[in-house]
Length: 46
Image (cartoon, rainbow, N blue to C red; front, top):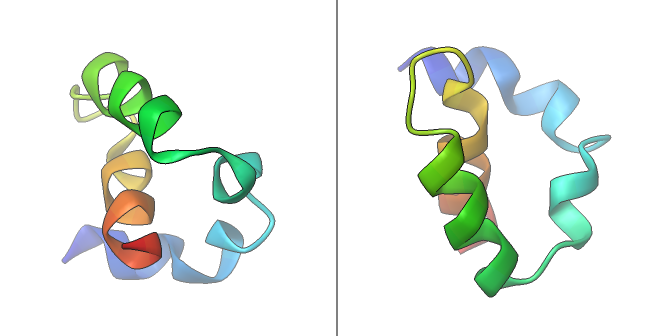
């Protein structure tokens, strides 16, 4: 999984403080392969 590479920086990501509603919007706008860590963060928080 490419998301594993973004595990360490995920802690410092501001998305961690966001709510589930915000995550849905992030996932929608981050669906592209440009930011695969956004989708991975959502799974880690869940």
